[in-house]
Image (cartoon, rainbow, N blue to C red; front, side):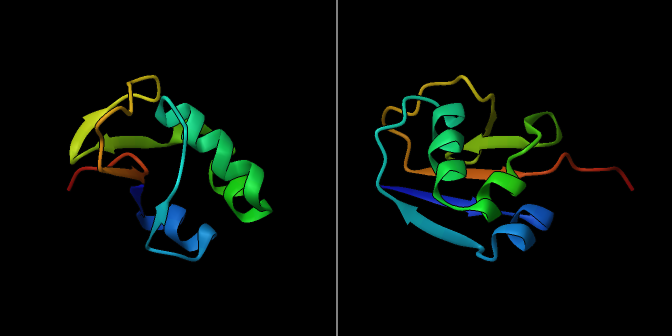
Length: 82
């Protein structure tokens, strides 16, 4: 079981701030594919991975990193300065 968190417009499109997901995904990219296949709202949120960042257990990572042992995955748009 992995805790998945959504931030900013990702959360708005999916309609949830977080959820627990039972998954066999090996990478965040695989997890995105599983979630996108669930419902249109997930597919819309994850339509352009280049517009998203991913963190594994609160460490910035990439979409091809292994999920083995990870407890939390967070998806969010790139932060802008200010």
